[in-house]
Image (cartoon, rainbow, N blue to C red; front, side, top):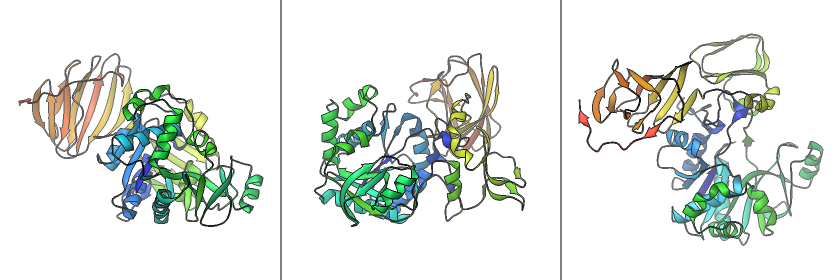
Length: 443
């Protein structure tokens, strides 16, 4: 199975757990059988592998999410990087060119496209495999998955098939309706459009060349920022007459708000939380190392992270986005390919950060023009290279890097350091990558 997972969005509807670099799919809220928590993207990736351990999985995403994907899924997963946001048609066209030119996948092979963040069970991925197999032999150019509705929702578009067969032709598409119209559509056998479809790779490449002038993957990547923002539905689906839809009647949830996310939580709290007996339908997600106490609350979600604290009625939590858009602050937590960092304190001329590096990983060799840095190792051991000199570091060691001096740190075990940045102009843009010496001096 060739599958492309679309991973987009800034996830602001799940603030404060999400921010511009940490979208909802990277939040670890689902408990596995061994008791650890995993994110939506980890859960989906694991489920795909359990159904087809040879599946070719590619994630189409923006540059800002690449580090988090590598952190959570490892370095082996395929990534089609969008240089900037241009909606789903350019993203899928770029991914198709990537599969063909970089991964060497034949134009005759079927590809399944689906969002990275559905809350589903194993039968969904078994259906995706069936969808891909059918697309590979069907005369239809596109085969969509239609979700059997469980209620008349105004949040989804609808697919009305020509029959109630498991696989049938598509009669018409309907935009997001009122609940009353949705009820009428469902009476006609309509299905939710969950954004899942399959095609032979050559079909989308052909459509891409018809709508965009490019020679191949690298050319399309280089001119990506000049492409028109347009969805795959508007660019391709609405103009295609030869479409089929396959019904899916299993569990499927679109977890896009705090209200829907708490419905999928297995317990009423994650992290340090105390709820007294007078709380009713209250959920707490706490990423801070301090307790949250809830007394006599009803239908409330409480979330605490380094980014901020949310206390909201569950229904009102769906309207969070404009308020979060108005918040302008330093990103306080982010996952990187090598680990993660959390901002502890910000002053006028300094910033203090707790940095966690995973075993076997290290930062790029780099320098800063406008700030000095001081690292204090608080757990684990590893190595630093500062101005070409390598030294081993253990708990209690202090490493100083004046402005302009190239440096890096590498973790032999899980390694945690307190990083203090000192200078008049502390900025995420003040970083210059440097070539790491082939042989560093030993110290």
